[in-house]
Length: 128
Figure 1 (cartoon, rainbow, N blue to C red):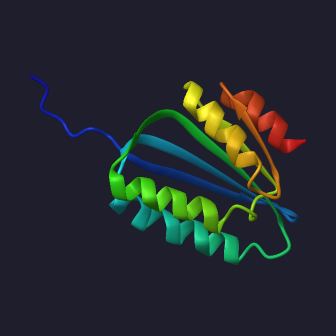
Figure 2: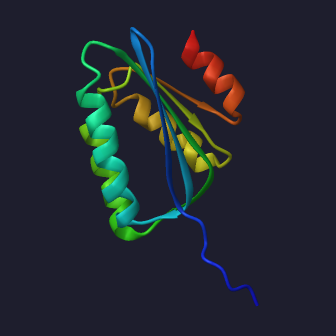
């Protein structure tokens, strides 16, 4: 019998250079509405202050296990709201549905989007 709290949440890294803002998000475990209540304002603030910068996003989904119902809605709203915020978006995952949803998402955003199975090639693509 295992008695532990399952790890879940969204890890955020934000790096800035003179002309570029790089955001890296790692989705971990099964995400909740509470996770998005913390995550969304942080990203909103970073994007608001990144005026006239190129903004690239890396989303690492390799440890992602899904959403609760409200978190899935939160994720959809976030995607719609920020679909034109990113110049390039790399999705790193290991499931077929992640690759499929990445391809669908690329048609709804102004920037480029690409799916990868490993973080290294995703970073290389983003930095070009």
